[in-house]
Amino acid sequence: MIELGKLQTLIVDRIVSSGYFLTDEERTDDILLPGKFVDEELELDDEIEVFVYKDSKGRPIATLKKPYVNVGEIGFLNVVDVTKFGAFLDWGIDKDVFMPFKEQRRRAEVGKRYLVGIYLDKSQRFCATMKIYNFLKPDAPYEKDDMVKGTIYQKSEELGLLVAVDNKYHGLIPKNEVINGLKLGDEIEARVSDVREDGKIILAIRDKAHNMIDKDAQVILDKLMVSKGELKVNDKSSPEVIKNKFNISKKAFKRAIGSLYKKRMIEFTDNGIKLSNKNK
Image 1: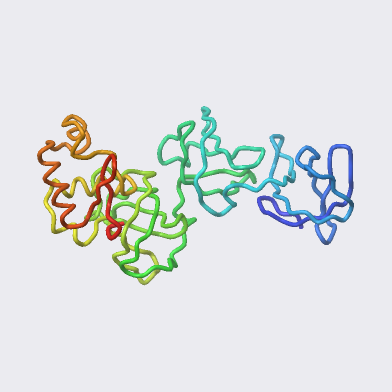
Image 2 (image 1 turned 180 degrees about the vertical axis):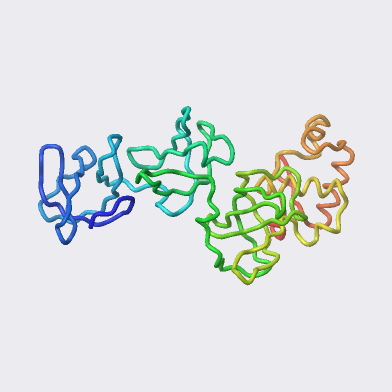
């Protein structure tokens, strides 16, 4: 049986002027693979892997292109258009995938990428959603104190920030671990502080040693954490830049980075500072 929304190996059954009709092993169904999608000529009974979707007229059709994100999975896709009904995202095939406004946790903008899940709606139309909780797995293969990467996809007033760890697993930054500046869509690095019995993981955005430093130093570390571990600002930066970035004076900034450097928590680069390897 030919299945919508899946990569599958089909057989060339007929050759027509518009392309190739493909069938399954039981030869109970067929579908058109347009010739414009094929670089090399195919012959009868050739086996070929295709993805099956619906074209702009709602007709099932095959393509040799593979979607960037499979149905039932999540990944980052770029927005290519926004209409009064929702947004369209580049899915990697000839037809963009639609994301209704009701499936957006924040309004999508053209040119930006978002972490989304792909599903088939009731009318068998492919859609994208930012509501990815049900796409994630609870059996994360991590242990306490492991360092992981993830994306913040939802905020809970009661719990904290929900994180898609490795874009596959359930993660949570508890309210008491949330730092200023974190927002939906941020890609972060964090430490596993606990693994619950149900397999979901609790994350600590700060290192254990961060509790031993002063307020100004903590502000700098927090900014580093949400900037992928590196910032283009140092003791040669202007007071205005430092004030705008950290809301502290240049004197306080120099004192704080000096303290962090002595504790080997940061390193200096040619044009800024970065987290040391032990804090990544």
